[in-house]
Amino acid sequence: MTTAAQSQIGNRKSKIAHYWSLIKPLQSGLLLATGLAGYMSARCPIFSMPTLLGLAASLFLAIAGSTVLNMWWDRDIDARMGRTKKRPTSSGLVSDREALRLGLILSVIGVGWAVAMDALYGLIVFAGLFFDVVVYSMWLKRRTAWSIVWGGISGAMPILAGRALGLGSVDWIGLTMALGILFWIPTHTLTFSMKFENDYAAACVPTFPSTYGLSFTRATIAVSSVLAALAMGISGFGIGMAWGFLRLLAVLSAGLLMLAVAITFRPSERVNFGLFKYASVYMLSAMILVVIEVI
Amino acid sequence: MSPLDRVLLLLTGLLAAYQVAVGIDGFSTLPIIAYTIAFGVLLVAALLLIILGFDVLDSPIVVVVSTIIPLSLSLGLVWQHLAAYRIAYLAFAILGFLAILITRSFPMPGKFPTMVLAVVHGIAGLTIFLLPILLALQGAVRPAFSLVGIGGALIGLGGLALSFLKAGKPILPRGTILKILPGLLLLMTAAFVAGFALAGK
Image (cartoon, rainbow over the protein chains, first blue to last red):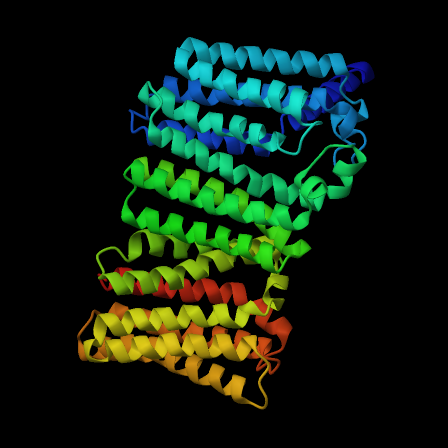
């Protein structure tokens, strides 16, 4: 193999690695898990492989596409924050045009595939992408700390979309599950914005800590944790989860509430980090419980 | 914390989750609540240890939390197998927990807080250790139920070591306790789960 060919392969590999980091695989994976759990919670024939694979692929592409478009749009503020300045879009490793093209291609294929599978499912997937990219990132993120509500609504769309695909309609359980995600997202993002408060200030992005102070932010985290736990519990009851699984969900919720109380009354960097991580574990566990329950 | 420690804690959490979700179905209400609290605390503690590392043990709340597990486990056992002592033991569990909570929340002179800790842990630990073994020896339950007693011995050791470490009177060096803690938690949880499962509840 010639040196030029080797270098070309190396370039392609690093390009794929940059693209991969652009789609935030962990975050996209967690949102995909909520979509799959929403679908399985409908107790439809879950082993209809074409539908399951179609759901997974279309949802993943749409989520990945919106994530790339967000990074493309936010590349200027990402470059000003220590945490994000090494992202491929803000460091120049992936050009603006390239990131935009990638985001659009992933989004169009994802949403198109979703619409082709089922119109209602496709509409909800599109709504998630629209709320995330246009309403949250482009319109509100730089204007108000409350933009996270719209980020939360878009994050709640995969589980609603999954259940709608399974049922063929939107029901109260799907909406309650979506509320669970909506209330869980502030637990996750507000602890993050507290940890990187200075970064966001440097980029002039309004956050709860910078706008309302740390006490109000902590209280919001506590309240949203309670509401998230309640919504997940009600959804579990609604889908007919066995008592044992509801007990386990209650235990995991109690852990979330305990950390929310701790961050309110005994705040510290460690508790903040613990809540941030535990919130992800909580949501993933809740989704796994829904899936196991159905299987 | 080493990767092995994390794996051991994850397995502990999974076993505790199994016990909460499946392992205590069919029991009466109070034992279900008691065991859910015990294994639930174990599950959340394992997750927090994985997330935050052993530093989380520096929190003053650890003494109180490490009391909840033996108290609620022993309460569940007494409620199921010693009907005559149900109310008395329930009162002991509640008062014991409150006593530890109060003696840990407010400064107290002398050895009183340590004595309270030793008495409450001692009674709860001995109950979990001896009751299943005695019941198995009497033929009241299947022999495998004595595994719960072995779990009780392990939790007694772990709980005492942790509590006295937190109380400033360590019975083992901190490094040794942290080294054996993940393995001890897993063995203890496995013994409980196996004891309940093999004894047919």
